[in-house]
Length: 297
Image (cartoon, rainbow, N blue to C red; front, side):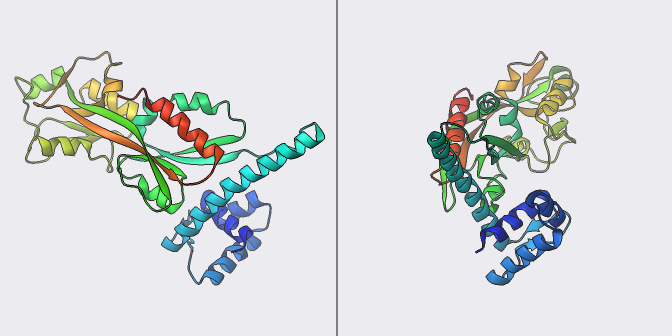
């Protein structure tokens, strides 16, 4: 495969259009389109869906993943050559290297709690920029398989081909409701969960429904949807409904919240799935994640 053709495909996916890809590559739109079509012709496969924005087919996912890996390894090879050149000249040569893009998937609750120290570490990495895809921990692995990210945080222990899995820790969630909300629907903590209003994060969030199944609740309660980690917690604290709140966020709340159910805790293990590559930058990111995750509880 011609690497310039592969890069054109990756740029089209990143920018969402062939025109956007052409702009970042410094070529014409027709040239960018021709590179992608030549790659498809050579492989005998349709690689992208020419929608708005552009999406990749199953075959395109394999090529996109290859493109991301080449991008990362190429940047590190150039960094090493740049360092050798600088040592030889006794200067940086007056040339500026573009930072490497590290694309990762992170779930919202991790982002709002233990993940944040990673930002402080990454702030000192002049050779790297981070681009984060927000994704539920139960739905994250397809991003890695498609090549959209080089690593992702997920609750799935099993890794895929060409990936490595590192255990990060366990996040504890607690089923809580605002006291006044609970008092309106029950005289004690054993509320009727088919009637007690509930807050859910979004269509990918199954944690509240898992709690209902554990409690053998029959029927679906009134559900409000609040798609934001801090906003979700604020909604529960305000009495909009009950919800599963990470204990790290619960301890910081100044609200009259009551645990509900006989066993209000659900522990969610988290793992860091990432490509198996000999990459200094990826290893640096992995170590930063491990240090930050040590504070998880």
